[in-house]
Length: 443
Image 1 (cartoon, rainbow, N blue to C red):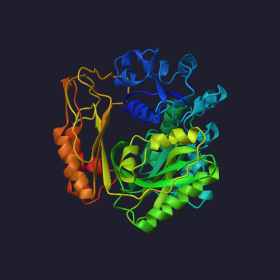
Image 2 (cartoon, rainbow, N blue to C red):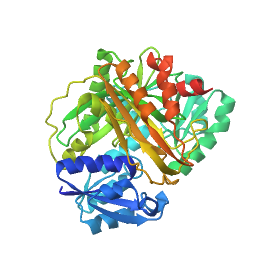
Image 3 (cartoon, one colour):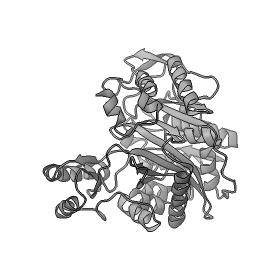
Image 4 (cartoon, one colour):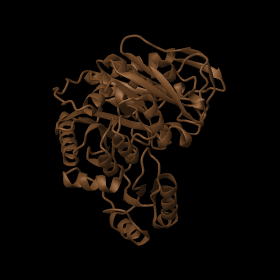
């Protein structure tokens, strides 16, 4: 591939542009009218407007993106994360047009996008599952399963993702009330009303394994990331490696993930996600068939460019590298345009900007002075990733970098102070945080 169209925006589009430039690959940016002055438009070799600000009429509009692909002459498409990155129909249309989709095959995306089918594969290769229904449930099946596994439990959308479509139930009365609402939400959010139920784990940790796999059956696992600092199932801070895993447990999880990927013929970059209870038991949760927002922490500790290998695998190269040696610790803070007290979106114009630097500090962002943050998209402004030889050094470095970070502007608020509070807390510094830690910290 000599040229790639990036079907995304913001910091991930710039992240992809940088790797492409190092590889000698030309890039084509697509943008909505609201993103005409975005940095990814300025940095790409070519840019094309694909529609109005609304995502449904631009970044989620397959015909518009395919038209841009045809006009640009690009040979491949990198979908980034979010938007159409896990859409099997989009992947199939790109493939059918004779272009390269930089990601898993349409068949794989369809399989892993269905949580029920993904759980069936996980069970087949020996990955532990949280006790729950064997598949989608109707009202009667939900009641029977609940009586069998006990409360609390969680209702999840079969086609869900990104933390959406999840409802916690503490009694049969709540189940009767919330099940029809969950089905309606699933239909509205994903076009699929199917839901399933699982036992609700009390204060678990969220662990995910990064993987790269090629079309020749080679699978490379790159350790784990812990993503337990969340609010309403949305990740806020990620780190690698996790204090919760022994080397033996890490090896066991990586071996099972490799088996899963080989079982389904997975290609490209992906992540298999788990919940881990206080006793160290881990349970399969889902698969993300794309690059993750938090991929830089893995890059920092393994010294590997995941985007580069996405592209190399997509153009048919073998994954012929040995697993790199893990070195040190890395922590990522998602800097969002949101009120630090209410977490409500807070877009505005950037009038003052200072990005921290120094040893072990990386910032992935699309911000610049004068940039107006649009209200139509995800609130992510920047990712601060800090590395240290020890976790303690990484935390101190992140706190120092957060002190330096300046993002000021009319109407613009960020969650920088929230990150300082979390990283300074005893629970986080001792590795005792869990997925409901933020609620406990705030309330």
